[in-house]
Length: 517
Image 1 (cartoon, rainbow, N blue to C red):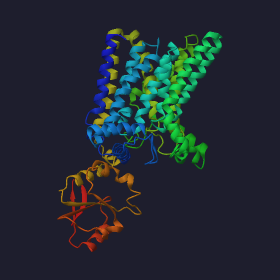
Image 2 (image 1 turned 120 degrees about the vertical axis):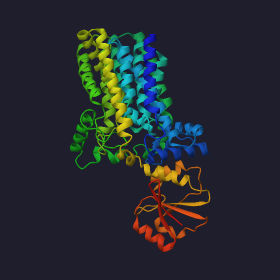
Image 3 (image 1 turned 30 degrees about the horizontal axis):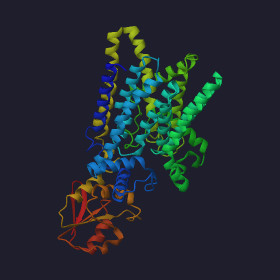
């Protein structure tokens, strides 16, 4: 790797870091309850010294990401920034990993270093990846581990390195501890194994069979070493293996075939037609790729298909295109096989690396054509302009359109974060009560909704949580009692409070309604 490539990659990683760390304290606005539950589990792990491979709260989550968040909290404290910083760092590493896997896959194809750099840049600025690199969701680990697994796998198959085989197997195994969608990823390793087996059988060299068994043996050892803790947990707790997967699967629909067709169509259309409608995952309904990246992606698909047909005797390079397509297809399956929230940008997050690599392949083809048409100098200017426009579009969409959109605040329950801030700012001699006033809600079944307050105000053990049906149990103990309802504008609650406490006053601060005694 030349000096210019190193500097270019470093520059791209810096761009990726800026996209992921800029205004991380305030954007996204508010701490979503799922993130806060992660934080509460991390705090519990720190206090008890029990770092689990699987946490059962919130429908169950693999423990690796939460344990990394616990490490971050131990350094930076119980803040939303500490939770999201972990995701940002993982996202930055993924930007670098995209280069290395791209360089392996595009060996002797359209200037591999340049194409790999473009894949890295597209990943660095992609709204899709940037967004999830700034949210404390465990799924952000999957693109990184998948990229490393494929990089080392392709390198190992080319160089026959035992270390690379073991490292690849380890990454495939550890990926299972990231997100439920990762369970499709080992199929890609199986495809590589079958291809390598066919290649060895074709060579009919007895001496190479021994080497084949050894190197793949190291791969399987690496896989099982990494996967064994989680697999062992599932062996004793089989009900946790599927979690919510069965409930949201297309097979649970009244008409599975029709639901599968609908989900398949919407998932394939998410890149260019209509993306995820959830403002937590996307700029509501916008395609997952900007217009220019989308064109590069379509071009890349055409180029990859062309290479599949042309590279019949190219020493396995045709197989690299197979890897790219299989990787892409496997990572779309979690979205295709679900009926909830389709298209779903989070469940298909693992498709980001192959999407960026395919788009970069399209860019490589475009670069070759424009160089012939415009000459080297003008071609470089035009192509750099194209990448700059892609970067600016994604930056503007995320930091100016999405970050300030009212629906984004709603999607992250910003009101709960403000509520936690209001409670935290009260005088030490204020009795603070959070009132759970939704119909049928209790302190226990409101665990997830209350999580942002409990996490952000973790150091305040004086906050009381009460159902609206148990207000009579409240005994004012300090000079001021503050009651903050989870649901504002509740006239029935206000009437109940006035019956119990005639001097109660309804007030508002920072947009949060509360009652003062």
